[in-house]
Picture (cartoon, rainbow, N blue to C red):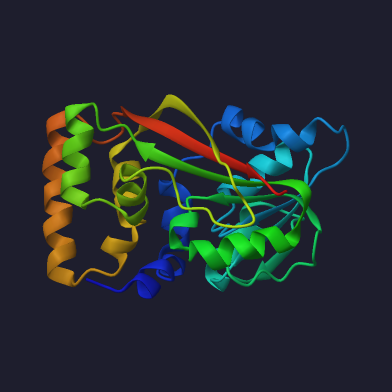
Length: 249
């Protein structure tokens, strides 16, 4: 299996597939992440770190925030610029953000904090956030209480994010001392091509050898036949969105 660094930097090879396969974030979750700083009634300064193709970026823009996007992969940022116009983009990582000290009201990570080294990334978040600014982390996780969704996860194998959240809350270090958690359940209509795009956007499949990729795709095709995801017929994929927020002292 590929190492952590290779997995975390693999998405640019399939940036268009990532954009089509990955879900958006519920507006309620984004509102909750920004709630502590939105109450001040001014334009928020927000960074989306590990922004990928801009799924969380566009949600923050819709809330009227002044947003910048940061990602280590230029291919992902190029896809973001096609999807979200007018948002400045910067190359950078959670441990080294190209942003000034105390310049943000909120620093958001969508489907990304599990790739960060939490001690260094927390310290860097503390540097770029103003006092009482918010570090916000959010993940869309498939709801495996439904048997076919559990089978989907078994065929694809668990992701780094799924393994981390199964063990408890995401690790956050100084200067943050307490983390709040909220969750939302919802469903996303998915056609067969959408389900394949979701699977093909995962780092473990992107980096897998050809024979392993073929084995997984055969298993997926069989499962999609069983659940009726054939042609343009859609199924509803249930999700649980987990959001975490911590205020900078």
